[in-house]
Image 1 (cartoon, rainbow, N blue to C red):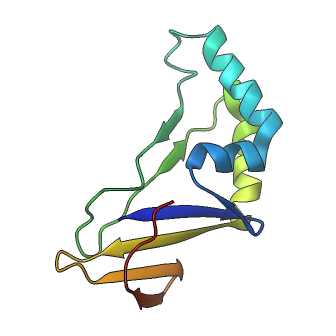
Image 2 (cartoon, one colour):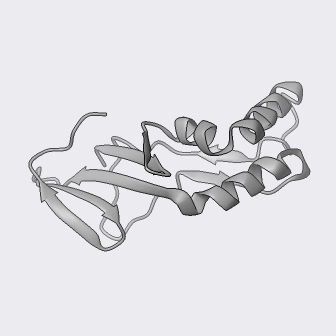
Length: 119
């Protein structure tokens, strides 16, 4: 995967964190504040993210780039993401090992491109 653009309500965001700020600003700030206040409480650390660029996926592979366990410390953040995720689209550009590049922005829709644009 060469590049991923997060398109939320027709606005492009270059990173997952930008999307989270756009979709769920107040709940995201509240959650991040909770993390700072409970730095060593493992129950509060329920958000897991993965890189989305520069990775190799096998054919048929999948990437879970965001995981958030619903917990009392993040309840409003979890519900905000759960509500807004339906308005998120990923534009993914990837290249084969032979450097044939493709862009997909909807499930099952792939088109060949000359190269993946840098974000």
